[in-house]
Amino acid sequence: MSHTSHIREGALVQGDLTDVRFLTVAEVASLMRVSPMTVYRMVQAGELPAIRFGRSYRIPEAAVVELVQSAASGAIGNVG
Image (cartoon, rainbow, N blue to C red):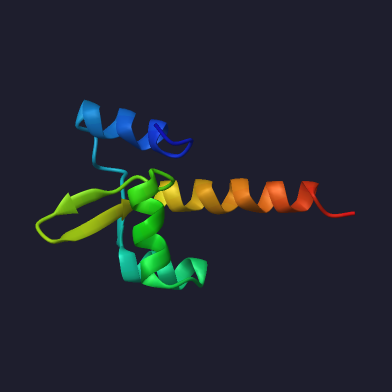
């Protein structure tokens, strides 16, 4: 299990989807300023949780925010 999936999995298992906002791969790529292929790789590696609907993925927005915040805090700690 990745460090980002435990929060959203709990909400999804309990069936509480009222507060979950899902983003497409293209939306996540745009927010993170990476290519869609990078997002797919992160999903496949388990770094970013996703739910597959047919042939497309949906990623919980909270997982993206958590991933970016943890990356930013790690980058800030490495400066200097």
